[in-house]
Image 1 (tube, rainbow, N blue to C red):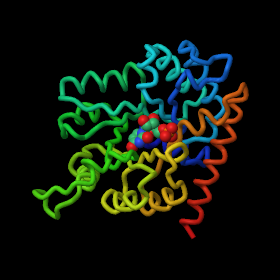
Image 2 (tube, helix red, strand yellow):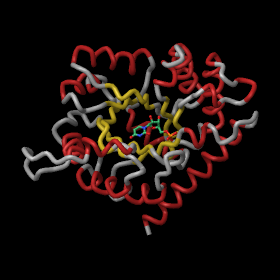
Image 3 (cartoon, protein in one colour):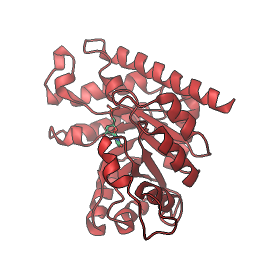
Image 4 (tube, rainbow, N blue to C red):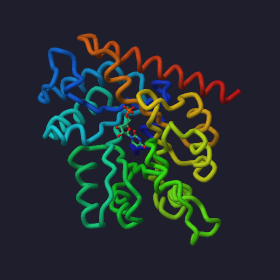
Length: 278
Ligand SMILES: O=c1ccn([C@@H]2O[C@H](COP(=O)(O)O)[C@@H](O)[C@H]2O)c(=O)[nH]1
């Protein structure tokens, strides 16, 4: 089954646009595990088990594993997600971008080593840095377009004077992903929930692409405005929240608290979708 099929199925089975982000920081684990990087798998698996029926996807962020030499735990977690929630796609947040020969290795890492269903990529090095991922049939690739961080303005909001219509950089990325770069319909875009007006703009340019939208929760993005902007066209949306769910409680009840927070966030998103459809 392709990434897009899985996303559609999980979204309708779980009635959800929510993606739970897996950004494990051992210093924020509950007392019995605190500071212990060998517990990364246990912590994340408990979150996955508690939320698998509430999400349309999971998004492990690879830096949180690699920083603790815990790639083996990420491999175990990928296998665990496949076992307990085979219908839920997993987006590996790696934000890779490199020359073609190196990109081939990164693609192998994401899709063969970790068995991800989709990956995040930086488009900054151009199409030949993206193409190796598209050789993996049915896998998804999300290009950074208009990111949630303040520094996203530094380059993404600049104007490209030598491209017809003088688009901003993020508009050009959206147009490339909707058009010439999207050879087999595998591309999506990353757009921050902190920028609902620009989600609208991206939707005008890229009406059919799936949008991965981080920034609700800890970064303060507007979940309701995000859904209304993202659902203006036909593509699906994946609204990520990581820390607000993972660390909803610092106690032994962290998994139950994560479930409650995920449930509330899912309901906020669904309610916004209902209002948008009125
Ligand atoms: O523009 C972007 C692209 C990616 N991210 C990633 O999403 C999560 C957000 O975590 P929160 O705890 O919900 O803030 C994190 O993994 C980022 O690396 C992003 O925030 N913005």
